[in-house]
Length: 629
Image: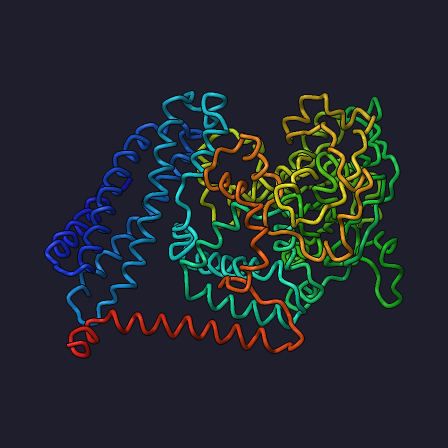
């Protein structure tokens, strides 16, 4: 922790405490209490960070790479100090003015106090990890259980990290992007379960975006609620917003045009590859886990039309193909294993195809929870083997092949490399894995603490995706939310008989967490199909159906917030119909008069802002000294 900045901050806080302690008004006492709490919190945080800093260097990768999760937490604290100093100095400069915005600064102080409280909880847990862990090992192992980590997650104040100070440790341009994404997510979650047409949803989205843009506190509270209770279906819907037909055409308008942009279907046929020494052959089976055998859809992108690619593009009369490329890029998209397609990732793949001047084969692998592990890995390995055997069709000489992926796609590519080593077949020439999760087990570590307040992928979202990927998102959890329509369970066949994906191998377990337990049968399988009405699947529930909430009910997730949510789920659903029209954050359903919801919503929004303006004016010194006097 920067001692100079910390001392400067404490000095400015003490100045404000001394000033507001002499104030006789309730407003002054509130400021005095806030600054006093901030002083105590910063002092405690300084002591905790000092203890962490003494041991942080013991966990570096090496002497030339001074970086680890403990250092990152200290960097976040140091990024916060200048912001807090700036706020306290603004209060010092304007507290004597008649135009002092007391309500605004009180909200700012509340946001900063929430962030400091969150960092305090994180620092104390990091100290526990340092005390019980092995020196040099970032993963504490069984000395601190995942139960204790999730207890900390439940007690961690998160509101401050999603409101006025969202992404404060990033650069200013990234902060604007994060704030925009948070506004979109909060607005989208408001109208996610609402009925009505596109016009009503568009109007509601505009109104909600305005509300969450100018009300950071409402946005933060709503996002915390969403991140802790969002269902898998909500995540898939939100992360698939860029999969619309219009948005998928945007890369064609603003990105480099490609001479080859074709869909390639890899047939469902067994592939045979030689071992690296060429003395034996390895059979790569057709993907068959959890779903029937089927071809794998891919997209072939190439800035130039190369020889051999006419197998997919057809012959061209007035142009001749260029020679095959010496390299091929095999790509897997991200999306938490549950969403996205290669189409939405063309926004950067087109630039890659032009800059690298090599063909790009991107895999549209099957998504969870319908196709959990190892189906996606099977398909990626199958496409990899097919590309090696059919390199001439891809406009590639077969010389160099690199694999690339972001997020979940990077995990699949690293898993592919491990499979090639295990099977003793040709390995990729290079790997590019961007922001890839490689430790999928929930072992306590500094990065898990950072994930609890991550503005892009919070811990609740990550748990939801991982449980879907390992095959834990099954049917019985719908009992927690009676209004949730039953889903068709994924067809879960046995794992492929080939040794290429024998889950008994330890190497498969090092790649991803496997789940060999079959999904319990649902009411749909037992004949109770009458519980699912024709319109029941129009909108899936926003409330998480399993993943975190069911773990809570089973006693595995000791978060008081989630426990209270699970216990009150039935009551909330029973009163949903009577309370939904009084809820400020609910969009009205479409009545016969199509304009009624829009007009009603506009009136309610205008009333809110008029009241806020009146409160600001009535709290000003000008009004109190001259109008009331």
